[in-house]
Length: 95
Image 1: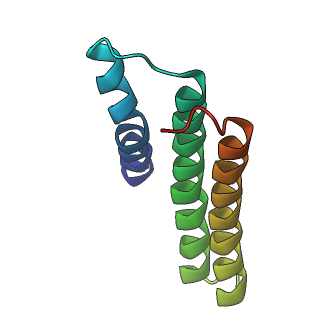
Image 2 (image 1 turned 180 degrees about the vertical axis):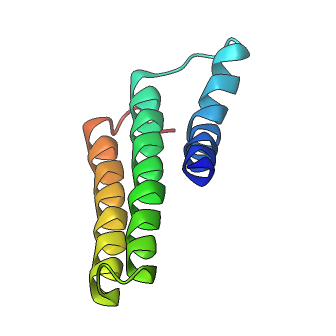
Image 3 (image 1 turned 45 degrees about the horizontal axis):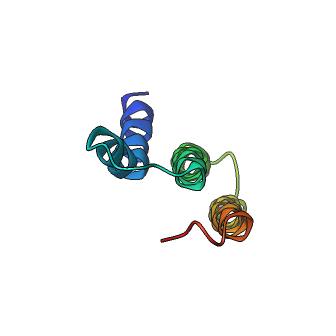
């Protein structure tokens, strides 16, 4: 459980920290930047949570190695796809 909490705190700091600093320095924050930060936070946190759970399940003999690798690969692919979708929704606001 502490590893899970630290993973989500790390994801929050890495994905939303720069946006918070920009906001606190009175610089404009765009809607798509907030959407990108939230999406990255959720994707990174879910990837750490479910990826760790899949690897742990393999170590305990609950699932095969192939299933564990497929779970982590699908999580990574969904995170990448969500990032491309957000860039496509807001092409003119990317800087």
